[in-house]
Image 1 (spheres, rainbow, N blue to C red):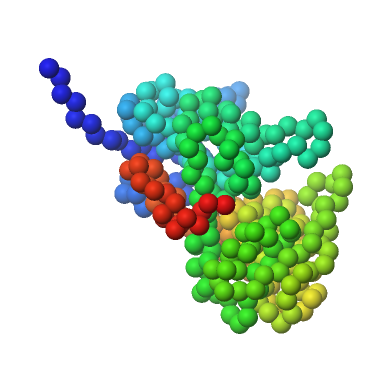
Image 2: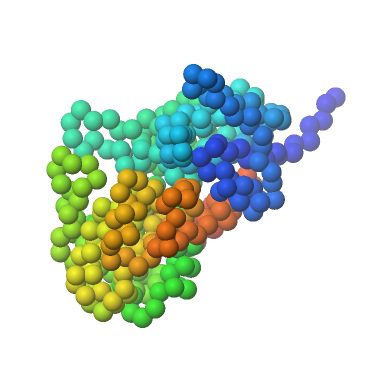
Length: 328
């Protein structure tokens, strides 16, 4: 008669867009990254083959959906999908996709007629490929959690960003939301820091992507240390417009904090020429050498992700890591 002794096995797998973060997470967990033998054929098709058996394992497949060199955001998503499919066909017991930055998160609704909801499409693709759980950090909108038809662990970079602010902000502090849509998140930061809250009214320039105009500032910023809070910095248009508006209202110091630093297109030039003294972001996305300027500081989110993956593997609470503050 056969007797089965159940032993859970953990495998952490990473795509190519943010290997330093993956290696840091593995170190935090006391694990090694599973060899994936990632390759690209001459015609651009992607391929992988796990270097060891993952049968019956909990497999965590990490990839930030971003451009990295010649690798596009679409390549990143496709590579992760291929790894998910490989794990499913190799009889992994449970497959968790770990997306520190979730691609297409801003396309979470139809803003106008005849548009896609691509954030939902991406979730569908992962489900179809064989993923059973999603882990991500500071999704652009909380509703994306409902796009994935399975458990979603929505982490937040708030603990590491608050630690940085507590050590670096001096004097009377005002947390500033660069637009009304981020006001709730900014309020959470203000409450934790014991700071005041201000909001900048933003107007999108119709028909022009990534073009914004900052309007009036609602709240007390004069003579105060103002820190702008956002989930991501892409071209920097929203952030810089808000920073300059706050500076014009007499702010003593202007800083900014965001989870995801994309820094696309003119972002670095805009930030360099703005009133912002310092921008702090996490390493959910790699920061290329040509974008590393004195104004930008990177803090690590590896421990938060590692703790969450450990909790998922051990079937314990992820929310308790944040004291419930990740539910937003």
